[in-house]
Image (cartoon, rainbow, N blue to C red; front, top):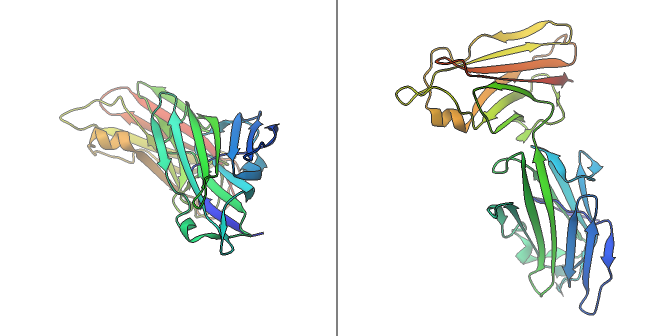
Amino acid sequence: MKKNTIICLAITTILLTLSASCSFNKSVKKNFSIGLITKGDGINVDEVEVTLDDHILDDNTLIYGKTLVTTFKSVDGFTEENGKYYPNLAVSLVSKVGDTVLKQANLLPNSNKGLNLDMKDLRGQVSFANPIFSDKTYTLVYTLTDLKGEGVLTSTMDVELVKDPDIKIDAEKLVYKESYLFSPERKSMITNRKVGFNDKMLFIFEGLKGFTNKNGAVELGMTMVVKDDDGRVILDQPDLFLNQKVNPALVEQSIQASLILTKGAISNPVKWQVKIWDKNSDATITAKTFLEVE
């Protein structure tokens, strides 16, 4: 069976049917493990499967930056014309205070031309990152409708995002919103700690505040130390900023440390530590994590 691939922000799964369909083909289903409720009115789906790192999702608490794959399996109930059906997929994400942080009205830009009838599995890939933040809970509303009829299917669930526990942060008088590893080549966060030789990696800090502002600029320093498990120093940069003065708005937006490990004898795990400090006070923040270089 062919699959239609959709890149979107959505997570859904169905494991347990709470009530049977009625005269207008209505249904309500709930997955108790993640609190997902799916309601169908004219549109049905055999199963909505959500996977995290190739495993079925069983907890709606997620690490910031993780990617979920959602598959609506064997969708049915659409009006058919000329051997095709015409689905529309929309998603919104709402904060607990009622702010809509994400809204996409149509995740299937070519659906007005119709999908072949054997393309009944709709799949979405989801990364939980900016404009979403950790330490918050969001309500996800995922909607499937029939462009040629009145059928609709909705799935809603709460998603709690937490910071990556593999990144240890020690902050003194500086605050931050997010800290994570990012692969520019893959255009995704690194959450499994596995990296390759010659891969470029970014250690990113967002929302940094607490620096001394002098005449509209701040002076900060940043050291980066990389050691392998045998204690061998791979890299030791005492100050990546030297004597630069930076706009505090740019610092708050994003500060990045870049690392490329060239092929050689390295004993895993590799410790990567970044320290940022204010040169006009004793405010500091230190972040460290461990990498498995393959």
